[in-house]
Image 1: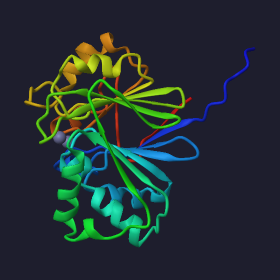
Image 2 (image 1 turned 90 degrees about the vertical axis):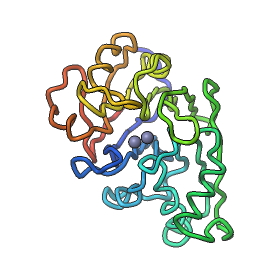
Image 3 (image 1 turned 45 degrees about the horizontal axis):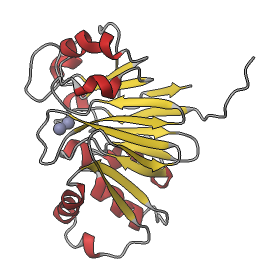
Image 4 (image 1 turned 120 degrees about the vertical axis):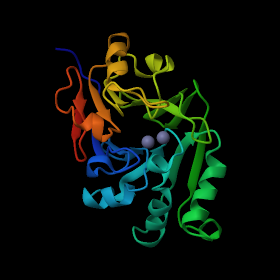
Length: 256
Ligand SMILES: [Zn+2]
Ligand SMILES: [Zn+2]
């Protein structure tokens, strides 16, 4: 028997795994990673606060939000999250938001578009924005690190796949993108790969299809693959997806 290093269980809960258009009645992208003392979100799509309430998550337990790219279905939930923190959840501790270069300007524009004047209000908690440079690991906290990889998906600022290291586990997320070889490094040997599968085999520009992903999976060798961001076409093929699982809103995965 070997002495075991103290690690916490890492739970990943899919609060939202839909595409931008509500296909299948699913919430926009929002994954909760619960690692014991504090949790973080991967993406915060426009419906994030609805799914946070729906699944009974305490928003004050979320210390950080990591963003793959700045489309509404991936970051449009931020204004409601921040106003809730201020007015309803009465947050007093910092919120850290990490996302692609250009996040600062897009964040201000988003807040003002949703709630004019909201950027001038003094808050009881700081919002710290971190802009992630591709291929450079950004340390979010002692036990949380994220690295971005450039992908092919126009969103006004660079779009990223994310490779997240926390509590000794690796979670990789493709974000939205057509196949690009940077995904190999993003997902290699990950404990969990969350991959876009927008369509089954039909090629849609700037989005990933299941057939293209399947072909590359042996090169990535992730331990577990969960598919997300599925259109109606793709949802019609669930659950018959060898080697992969399909996400549902509310799906919880424990990495131990
Ligand atoms: Zn999307
Ligand atoms: Zn997108």
